[in-house]
Length: 392
Ligand code: PHB
View 1: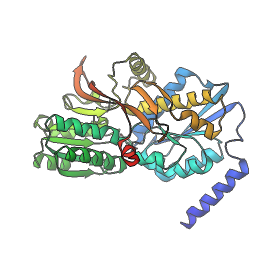
View 2: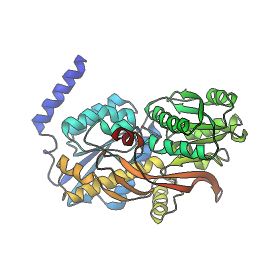
View 3: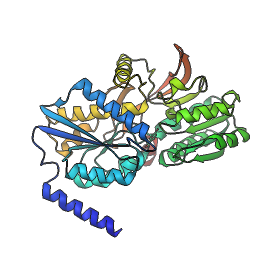
View 4: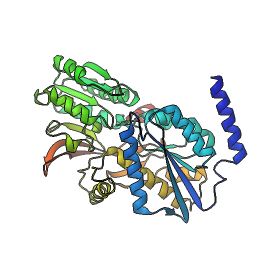
């Protein structure tokens, strides 16, 4: 505690001394992303950064007459690092805008964004509460609740009655489980058991065995970006792909990054997700082709669009302010902004600063020899259900 107080005090002094946000050379705007480029959530950090870099490559590095200076630093998936790096970026690098990554790191950086008044675009975190941690936070990715409630309603309509949930044991998993279970039990379904799997180096086998033994008709699963491949392999190794138990979840379990190498193990799996590389729009086709070209052949995934759209939000906000980096002007420009993303139409809710987007029901099918999440139903302009519920 004592140490934290001291750190906070010296941060405040540093801010006043340099006049954070104003000491930047007039013709440059610095944007600093704090991302998990290594560690447990490295896959997500790398994908978000690849999306952000692709946006810059396509749209240039000059906006409203200002040269964009783009900085990425690795928090190694450690929240304390994220806070320290965010502080250094504000005090030493004089960034005007921050980019935040996964939930624990975004939570830890929030006081820095608030104190220094730095508009911060949340590009990976899917936990509802994150955007409430700072009035300077704006989200361009997703919430787990946004997908999980719709998944539950669909499962009820399509005959699921008994579910076992398998959740990665950290904030987004808890939220996916909570919203799913609320909707599913309200619809008359029963949750037989919720199984929590450690986030780091997960071994799903014992949990899959337990789930199988409980004989549900449906398995609802959340694993974060980077783990869908391991999950799919262990799911098939246990014979669960042939057990007759339906597998459903938010989009993360059919991550496009892992689908190409998942063989037949995920065929038929139905998810509620906001992005599929198979989304049939002209813009998405261009995006998927450009992403593959920029990354040595990788398939664009749901995390990458959070980074790509995050940069769009920043570029367009700067255009609206005429290149000025006044934090409140930038925030005002971001609130309510609407545009077409590779995922479909999206906007920033002006009241909550959270993303509003379509959620699609998708089924994994083989197309040209590879599995893809094929969209077959659309829920338009879905808001974060937890904020919606709180506002009532
Ligand atoms: C998160 O940080 O909340 C997060 C990261 C990866 C996911 C989902 C949620 O796939």
